[in-house]
Image (cartoon, rainbow, N blue to C red; front, side, top):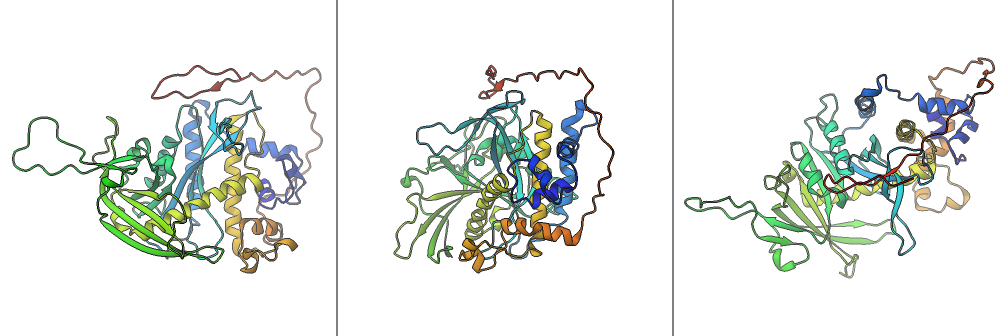
Length: 454
C-alpha cells in the first residue's frame, strides 16, 4: 500500500528505487523490491499461470465493484490494446521477443527486443473538455507462445463470462484498432452474444456480400458462402449504402467539423477451417470528416467494422462516438510510462515484471478514484492552457495533489516497526551469474523458429 501511494503521488522519481524517497513510503529502499516480489507469488510453480489468472480475476472484481453504471449511453464501453516494453539490454530476462516500437527516424525499422503487454480498460462516460480517463481492468503479458489477438480474446472472454461482474448479460461494446479486425480475434469472440466489437479496418481489405438466395432445388456441390466482392479500394464494388447519417463535433480549438457516415449491412470476410466467418455477418461504416468549407480534413476515409449479434442496437453515430473514445487508452499508456514508471522497473524476473505492471494499473485506478477530491494546481506556465481555464482535473493534476489527499484520509497500512539490522549475506557467499536467455522469434502458422542468440 505504501508503494502504491508513493507511486500515485510521484512527481520527481525517475526510477522505481527513488520512490523510497517519497514521504508516503515509510520503509527503506529494500522494501520496494520485497513489495513487488511478494505482490503475487504462486504456491505451486506448476500451476503458476492458473493461480495468476485467479489473482487477476480477483483484481477485476475489486475494480469492477467501483465502476459507475452507464447513464448517457445504453452499453458498457471497454477497449483492448497492446503496448511494447523494450528490454534490449536485459540478456538474462526470459521470453523476450521482437516487438513493435515506434521510431521517429525515417528508414529505421520500428522493431525492439522485449515484451508486450495487453491492457483491457473501461471507458467511463465523458463530456466536453473531459480528460482522457480510463479504468484498467486487466493487464497481461503476451508470451512468446501467444499473439496479442489471442491474449485480448482471452481477456474479453474472462470479462464477459463471469457472472459476478456487472457486464454479464449486459450490452458491452469494445473498441479496437486495425490489428484486431482480423479473423483470429473476431472468430474467437463471435460466440459472446452481448458483445459488440467496433474495430478499424485497413483500406486495402476485401469483403464479400451475402450469397444470393437459391431459388428452387439446391444445385449439387458445396453451397455458396460468399457473394459479390466488396473491395475498399474499388468504389465501383460498393453500391449504395444501406444507411447514412450526419453529425458534427467541435475540436478543442473551437473548430466545427461535419461527419458523414455511410453503412453497409450484412457483409462477410473469409475465415479459416477452424474459424469459419461466413456465419457471422457484420456492418461496415465509412467515415468522412469535412471542415466548414466542405473540404476533407483527412485525405483517406476511415472504415469501421461493427461485429456482433447485437450490432443493430447501435446507430451509426453511436458507433462513431464510441470508437472516438478508444484513443484515451493511448493517453493511459503515455501517462503510465512518463509519470507512473510503467516501463522503468529493471528486473531479470518475468514474474516480478508482471507484478509491477499490475501495481502500476492499481495506482492509476487510485488516481481515478481521487479525481473528485483533487484540486487543480497548474504551474505558472500552465495557467493559460484550456484545461487550466476550464478547471479540468487531469491525471497529472491528481498525481500532484495526491499526497495531500492521502495524508488527510490516512492509509490502512500498518506503520513499519524496526527489526534491527539485517545480518546480510554470509561471508564468502558467491552469487551465481544469471543464465543468458535467447531472444525468441515467432514463426508463422506454427512454424517454429530457432532462438536468436542474446
